[in-house]
Image 1 (cartoon, rainbow, N blue to C red):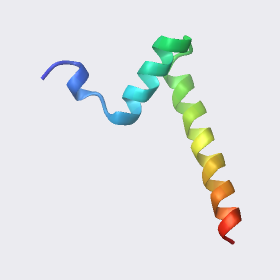
Image 2: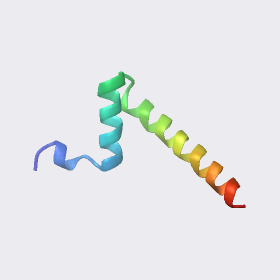
Image 3: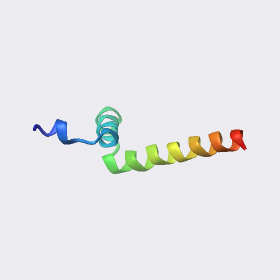
Image 4: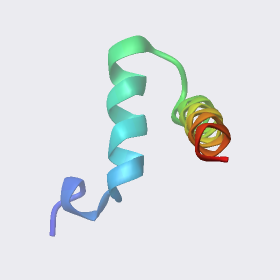
Length: 48
């Protein structure tokens, strides 16, 4: 297996964003996580 084949899908997203925009992979993990939590709360409030 190559290095790329061992990257989890969410990590691949963070690595790609890091290479495109320049923040660290850890920063992108927090940013993407926060965005997903925000979207989830919006969807949950619309259903309730």
